[in-house]
Length: 308
Image (tube, rainbow, N blue to C red; front, side, top):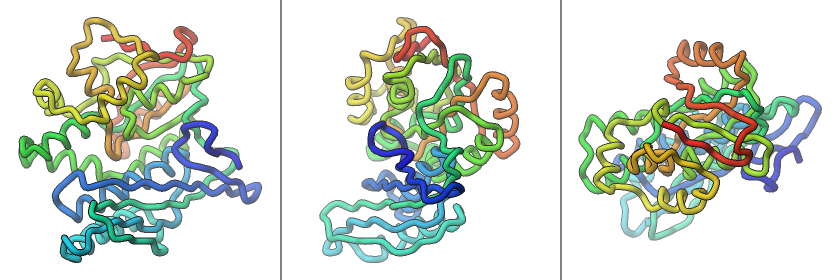
């Protein structure tokens, strides 16, 4: 066992030879958009992301389905599974089956198996002083999804956010493997600051984030000011606020975005300073709008410093 349950890594990793290690992960959730096909794509992309965050390549996937068969037509499930399958094919992985149960609440996701070289596993800890922090997708999906459920988001906003959530982290993962990085995680339910806390917890390093550099959907600001913040975002803040030092000039709505519980978010990468520009340039060549948002320091060890 290379990576187990001892730390909050994105997936488990088991060495089976000197050249190959298996990556295993599972993730599923309730619908966050109305369109079943897009829900399937988003849920699949979200599950596949854990393999990419570990520096691996997905090989096989199994559907995980909870479905209210007496309340919903099977055509909805068919569209969800079609969306998931299309995303699995895009990842060049293979669907090998799955399991379904009758449940009053619809849920869908994947169990994914991938591979990685045992000596090239990228964990969420391992950041070193002087590293630069790069984020590959904008924040705010949790807040905007709350607005979507409330019928307050426009079609343009919905389309933009859905496309981002359904985008694989494959390109970002391949580039970071080429360049060489020290740590990585994908930004999902614990939000940017929550996942940063996981990266430094119990370590000898701290992190400084510049809030003005962090990318987010502009609509998230409007909705956050309206109080359209999911419960998970509040829980993230309550759980991790003792590790986060917030500059007083940072407005409350931006704090909400920094803690916002994401769905199928981007990769958060800790890269040596001398390789940061190369990483950014190659990511942008591949169409990934990555942004440098902060750095790893020897100061405030085990904590996050958030500056304007």
